[in-house]
Length: 93
Image (cartoon, rainbow, N blue to C red):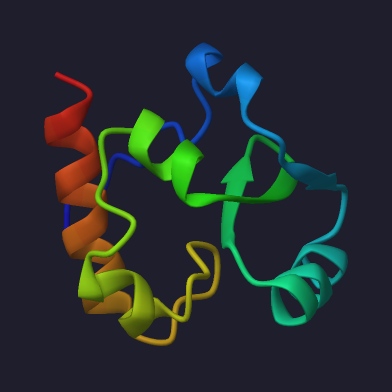
């Protein structure tokens, strides 16, 4: 895994509706209730849509999302998240 964690929010995501939370538990509850993608930003968490994932240069239909349970923070499969980290770093270049 690449040890540097890429930023998971960029200014082009301003136009995408996301739900923001101060605790992981609240974000996780939202993810379970409504679906989406749970991502971190600094000391906060947000649940967002496929459009935001595309803004990050990632494919929302990548099977690694399913493997991590759509949860970047506490992934079901850490190796799948590592692959997504590498893809995000490459997309940010």
